[in-house]
Image 1 (cartoon, rainbow, N blue to C red):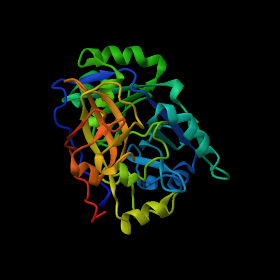
Image 2 (image 1 turned 120 degrees about the vertical axis):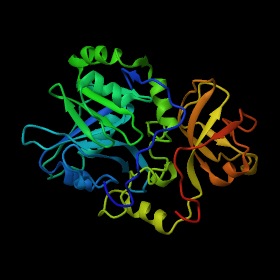
Image 3 (image 1 turned 180 degrees about the vertical axis):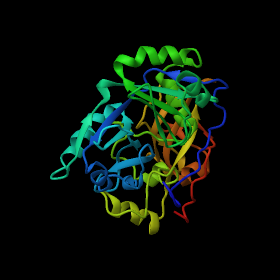
Image 4 (image 1 turned 30 degrees about the horizontal axis):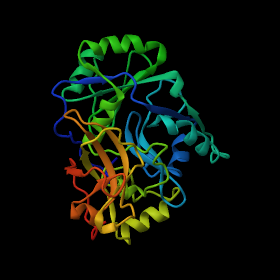
Length: 333
């Protein structure tokens, strides 16, 4: 990507001093194939798919006609030896088949096919400081943000802008890849993988939070997941109006709660809003030091007041944590 929508990669502060590997990150994988694959997605997603060269990637969101995020994730043009164009799309595992079906209904006469490839592939996450060095030592590759690198035939590694790496390979090859990584990274579970995303301030829409947020509410514009110069796509009118004419009262913030078992879509409250909820949890994971780290879309006024609680009035108090990037204020969407 280029232009104002491109954001410089960053590394969230406080990450593990050594690299970690997660064998099952809980994400899904869609493949969109055919000579019209990029053009088809261009009219469906918020990102500029047709601008990508082979191996390049970007964040994306798929939105309802009302401009709310049905799903989001990362995609890239797959380097391939054959002539078939293919785009790989990462998204929440519990949304993969739903989004495949929905996208497929709009293919119509386009020469494109949308396939849920999750069951045939393993997705291994690599995070923490020096994770790129671990990938190099294990597989002989040099990862770079928003680039897909192939190795060992059909396996590939894609680095997200926050420098987490997703290894994509056939299920049959998983034991070999995991054994190679085990010599260079510590094994962690999916909760820890989600914590890295929360520390980086990257929201991942799941079935629980699908169709709740306009992309700007989730800071998806700040993270480069929306291109405001491309042509029309589903939900574009609402999203553009919010960007240029609206006053955004809600944004994504990072918090810590002193309790466990915080679930996506849990509501947040503040005395200034009375019994009405003023925010919604997008993602949550156990904090290494105790309690729960979470991302939530919250009314700015409630965040400024600093009296947010979880679940109900009088519930556990939330402590705000900084994001590793800055979001525009309400007066400058």
